[in-house]
Every structure is written in C-alpha cells, then in structure tokens.
Image (cartoon, rainbow, N blue to C red; front, side, top):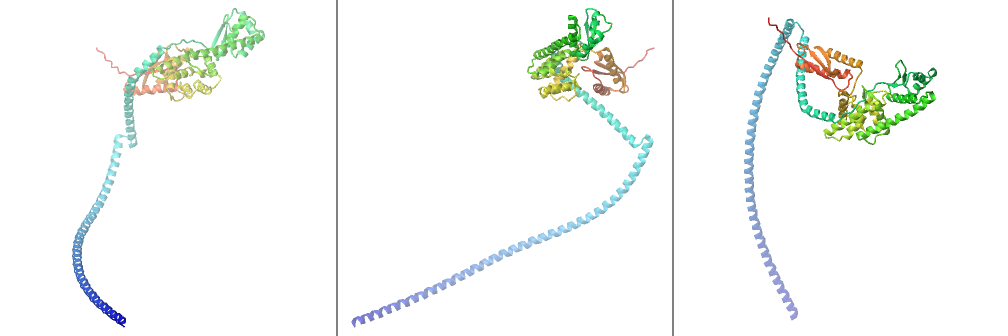
Length: 502
C-alpha cells in the first residue's frame, strides 16, 4: 500500500510538475508570439514608410523626367515648325526661280534662232567675199595645219637625228675603221667565160672531131658551151655555173696536153677533172673554216662553202668576200664586247646560198638560211643569213653585225666591179628617180653612183622641206633600186642674187 501510495503520490507530483511546466511554457510561448507580432508590426510599419518614401522619390523623378521630355518635345516641335516654314519659303522661291528659268529659256531659244539666222547670213556673206565654200575653207585650213605639222616634224626629226649622230657617229666610225684596218682580203675578178689557149689552130679541128662528135660529147658531159671562133689559138668556155666551167677547163687542158681527143678519152678526163675539182672544193671549204677558226661544220656546208671559190659577184670572189665578212663581224663583235665566234660563223656562211642558187629558185639569203637550218645550224645563224639583205626584219645583234660587215666588204673601193652597161643604167635610174620629185631642179649621180646631189628650187622648197625631200628620195631609192653598199643623198638649196654695176 505504501508503495502504491508512493507511486500515486509520485505520479500526482510529476503530473503537477508537468502541468506547471506546460503552463509556464504556454505563457512563455504566448509572450514570444506577442513579442513577435509586435516586432512584425513594427517592421511592417517601417517597410510601409520606406515604401512610401521610395514611391514618392520615384514619382518625383518620373515627374521630372516627364517634364524634361515634354520640354524637349516642345523644342522639337518648334524646330519642326521653323523648318516647315523654311521649306515653304524655299519651295516658293524655287517656284519663282523655275518660272524665271522657263522665261529665260524661251528668251534664249528666240535669241538662238536669231543667231542661227545671223550666222547663216554671215557664212553666206563670208563665202561670197572669200569666193570659196565652207568645205573649201576647211580643206585649206587643214592643208595649212598639215604643212605646219610636217615642218615641225621635219625640224624635230632633224634635231633628233643630229643628236643621235653626234652620240653614235664617233663610236661607230671607230669600230668600223678598226675592223677595216685589221682585215683586207684580195679579190679575184672573174667573168662567166674562160679562155683556154691552144698550141695551134689545128687543135680546133681535133676538138670538134669528125662530124662534131667530140665537141658534142664534151658539151653534153660538162654542161657548158664550147665556143670555137676566129680567135687565134684559143677557145672559149661559157657557162653561168663556175664549177662546171672549171671542170670543163681542166678537162680540155688535159685533153690538149694528152693529144688524144675522142669521146672515150673525153669521158675519162672529165671524171678525173671532176674528182680534182671536188677535192679542191672540199679543201677550199676546210681551209676557209680553219682560217676563221670554225669547227664542227657539216660536210655539206663545207662543200657548199668551197664551191664559193668559183663564184663571183660583181667581180668579187664570193669565198674571199665571205672570209672578209667573217673577220669583220668578229672584229666588230670584239670591239662591242661580244663573243666573236657566233658572228664569225654567221659571217662565213652568210652567202652560202650562192653555192646552190643556180639549182634552187629564190633569193640566195633565204636559200642559204634554209640550207644552214637543215644542216644543223641554229636559229641565230640562219636568221643572220636570211636577214643580211633586209629581206626579213633583223632581230639579233649578230644579224646586224653580219649585215654591216657585208656592206663594208662589198662597198669598199676596189672590192667589186660592174659592167659598163649596168653601171650606166644604174646611174640613169638614180638621176631619173630623183628628178621625179617636185621641187627638184637638177640631179647628178656622183662617185660612181655612191652619191647623188640634188639641186632644188629655192622658192618652192625651204630648209625643212630639203630634209624631208632627202629622206623621201632615200626611201624611194631603197625600194626601187638594187645596188651594192649605200648611196649618199645630198640636197642643195641656194639663193643667188645678181646685180650689175654700170
């Protein structure tokens, strides 16, 4: 019982304590809630105050900004109104100006019409006074301007040529003179016939043979004409081919020396002479190449070069001429600081076409260029060959040197000769060509046709016209005449006044 009572008392005590604690806790919680509500209310009031202040501030700023924008809008409106007023004023001014321009255009059209009528009337009066139409006046003016331009062009060309000659003449003269001084070859003058001496006139009959069989055999084999006339103790061999003529000469000399002249013997001697001439041709070609210092020439080129030994041009031996051109080309190349081997090779071969021009149709320069190219020579050599007579445009310095050397070798005194008939014809053509130009009073061919002096009429040709005339005549001479070397054109203009003292 005591225990039970103790347990009941303990339970009641604990319950009372617990209830006291709960009451205390409830009172404390209420207090806390009350304090929290008061604090929340305070915070709420403070937030409301702050929100009101912020709203008031934002509203003030918004009002200020709105006021500023309204002020800006008002200014823009005033400016737009001012611009509109300005544009309206300008538009009004433009309308007035357009009206004035239209009025001026009408006035100008009326004035233009009046001026056109006045110009037409003036033109009619001028044509009446001048006694020429407007087109004739234009043509006259154009002719005067053309003549003036020609005069000025001639003056300019003359000055430029003088400057160029002043700069280049000394050096060119020095180079050419040095080349000429260091090279001088002999030239053998030959013709298209060969004369063979006979021991007696009885030999003529033996050469003719019974019923002419010996002479027919001889001519058929050699391809030349054997002329037996009244010339004592001599016969003449005639042919345009110098190699065939040389073979025929040797054959006839062997037959005369042997004394046995018959068809079989003629054939035998012809073959021996042909072999000798072929050997001489080969040796001549090899010697020429060796003299110039050229190696590795094709055998056909060496043979063609040797054939030039029996070819002449205006009496000048072509092989000697080729050697001289080779030497001159090499010397001038050396003077210019160039390698002389190529110009010398081109100079030696420049007339190679003359060795076969009897067999092939065409110019010897073009034939020689084709032959050289076919036998392994380069483009520079073939171009120098084909261009040395100006038949094609010169493109290399080697071609220039070969052309100059060819002119020097052919034109120097004593190098060539011509027949009297061809010489006289060339002089006559030269003087006739010069006389055909307007303003020429007299023309004289001088220095064996290497210079022509032209006397002009001083009242129709002035100084500048003289320069133009000389250039025109030189061009016509180049186009129409064939001649060795060059021809000097000298135009003489003088004024003479004569009075007599009585």
